[in-house]
Image (cartoon, helix red, strand yellow):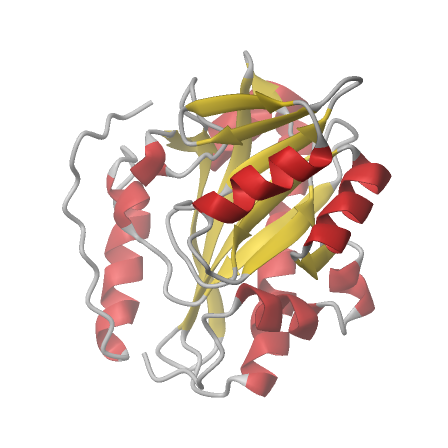
Length: 259
């Protein structure tokens, strides 16, 4: 795709977009994970996500909560309660496999049943090299997991269908418009640092107060989930524009079901 080195780093991208006040207001506090930063963030927010600085498809992401007594870690389908912060940090450290990790404020996402929901918004350079939002969808986490990725068993829905369901049609349209605005602001900001950038996939969540949060920005987003939508116009447009700048998407779907 021709992006500058560093574009894969979640930390670098986060540092870039928080320089824009309109974006910073939608970015959960994020730090490089250490024993001290994890302790401080859990003390401040009660729940955090820890994730690899360089990673994809939700692999390696852990949810960590501070309980009245002890700590709770949710990693894949593993749910583990640990008595002390030290034991929890040691368990996380052993499972991160020496990779650089980030710790991010946990957002109490709107849920379907007890399953968290977030949204993927795809934005690409079009034929005129202008930024165009080419797709959006909703992802509902697998019942046993803390991440929503389709590759991790999440269920895919049309974004507007899900937003209308949880917020009503009028509010749903406004929220989707806000998502699109955040995508355009993010693309313009990141393109100043990474001028060869051609596409982004934003992971956006809503909390119980209907506030939008940018959880992550992907510079080589997976297009497979769009294949699962009944409306195929988005994936066709995504693939068409991707071919123009040399991006070939793996659209093979395995063990995935439409919502």
